[in-house]
Amino acid sequence: MVAAQTGLDVGEFVWTGGDCHIYDNHREQVAEQLSREAYPYPTLKLAQRDSIFDYTFDDVEIVDYQHHPAIKAPVAV
Image 1 (cartoon, rainbow, N blue to C red):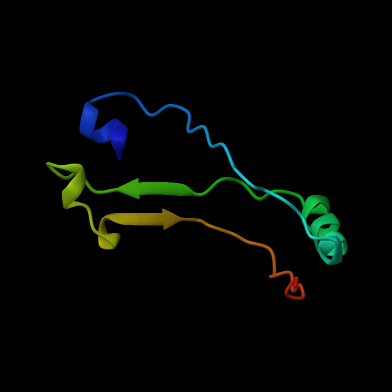
Image 2: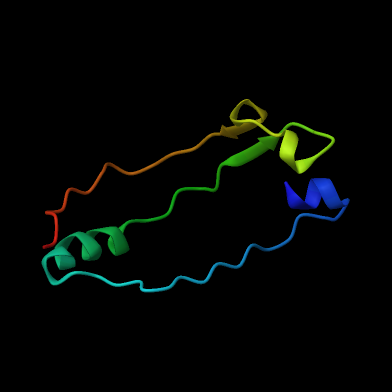
């Protein structure tokens, strides 16, 4: 969306997390998550809008998205 509004090519999105952690009672679920093979990336289709503030949920389409089954984990207390 930012690239479309600024006339730039799509580039790289860099994310930095804070306070990221794994609870002790979630180790098995984390191991399962890390053992999974990634699916091919989906395609993101974005409608053209005059302003970044004009976008709605209907302007975004995700095509060919695949996901693995959910991994259940107990609530950590």
